[in-house]
Length: 285
Image (tube, rainbow, N blue to C red; front, side):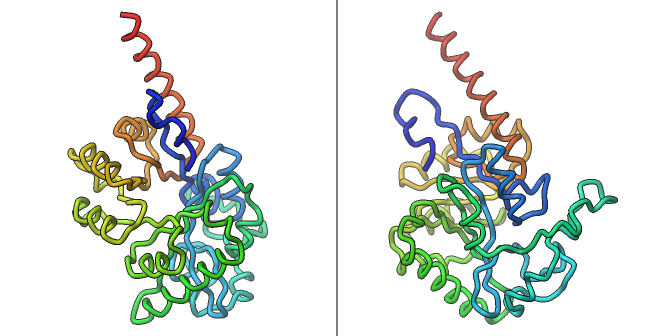
């Protein structure tokens, strides 16, 4: 992952800036526009949500239902790709609650293949596998895992770009079996004890822990240190405050997942300058 060359060099490594559903603070989430803006802002990695359409296509949409973000309705896994393509993915997006400037611009729910084709090859992707509610979760998880594994077999170099995460441990275990070299991360909710989740990650052989920022307490530094001893990366979501970004960088997190990648780039650059200035002052004195 980016930034690894600074380990052991005496310099504090900057966390990866991971754009949450793209630059979703300024553009409709999980659209090609949001992803392209994130790249222009300098993001190291893009986080996006993957579901499967009824006819077996991997598509990028956070919610199980399309109603919150589009002008349509219905469960993603119950709609064909053609039906999903007809929806306006910019329809509901507003910055002020009054104007809907992205309606009618041709923004669509993209397929994973479209996202991969639209982004520079150096941009890494955090694919979060989303599953529908109800009894079909296991079957849908298997379907998505099989699709992702097949995609990686067709393009082996893709494995280097991907970090696949999910709240569902079963789908991550299945992916590990299908593509052992694939990086995988467990997303956790604030009410899950993080040390227990870290142990689950270690036992499953995953490579990353993705805690909610709200779950990090006063023992965050100890958790991060323990994770690093185990070779496990810690990527924190969703962080939009520049002050908090600097705090997390000081704690040694590996990635900051944010709706505003430009804000993170600026905050972390300033933090690094301050860190270097303090180090120089100590050396001089």
